[in-house]
Length: 314
Image 1 (cartoon, rainbow, N blue to C red):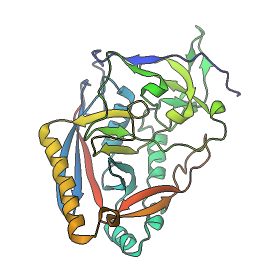
Image 2 (cartoon, one colour):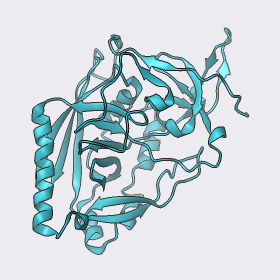
Image 3 (cartoon, rainbow, N blue to C red):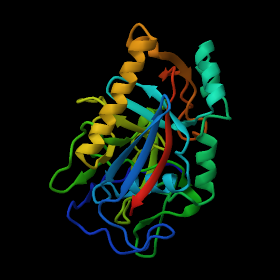
Image 4 (tube, one colour):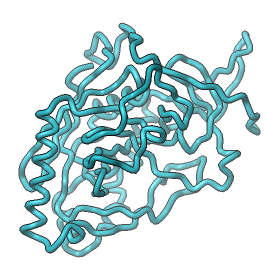
């Protein structure tokens, strides 16, 4: 069908509102405002365990999506595939030690990242199609008997709603900003011929169905960890849904960064030698936008591995 231009509405989440006592995932009895996730990173043979507090009261669908992916084991044994000054990006590629080392030695990370054995887009789509991920974005809508917009599972799209202000997601009484260690759901900017026509229908956490631009409702599994005092990933365009739980977790992240810097000092002449600039295709499962190609990543020559993501509190 051709999209009708519907009145854009603003949807909000009350910071102090209770999320409810409905059952969460299997084995859980109560959803809290602030679930917790334990992310274990490994570098050069040492593990670094960092606990995150997730802000379900502000970003309910983003947090649910992250928890569902973590519960499925999706993030386990993956890599930080893009090592930037202020942000580390993960959630897109599996780790295989021998193949990774060979790619590093031969300057062939482009082969690694474009190999279906390692990129996880197909795994993500399989999870979505199996019903393991809760939909929030749809390609079509209809009206119910009362004249309200409604959506159907048969029109569910595999991407995630964007819970941030540029997508009209408003946090009552304000929100926390991006800060050191914060966890963000990331999406690759899409190549779209006509942004004005690229619309989807999103279902808010309150059940309201709205028509919105697709470009802000296109995240899948990628996340970023802010490792600097500033970031190019603003809270207005990316859902910053998790924060370090304590000073001890900040210290652990510091220790990991220090270990990487020491490794660079011992093994390389400068920071730039620690990474290889690599082109990769992304969004292979994209239907709405054109396939994005030649995305540039700075891939660490020594793997930073996401050993596991475990939800410790729901």
